[in-house]
Image (cartoon, rainbow, N blue to C red; front, side, top):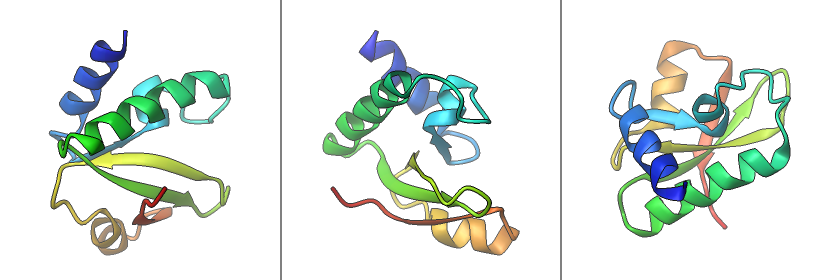
Length: 95
């Protein structure tokens, strides 16, 4: 299962360059079980350790609850969101 999740993450970051846990789970409201989100986060962290993705903390304006996001290495998610006037901001993820 983990390999399938990792493969899905790698496919999703091709365009637009990044994806959140909610994007992988198709859960825009964040209403799914937190264990499901934890599985996706674990896969994202594994890919990050392998140097395949860069992790970001995405902070949604209305929610203020951070989401983990994976992006292509070198993709400046913070600047991308700012330039698009997005509903969220991104900061580099640190453990």
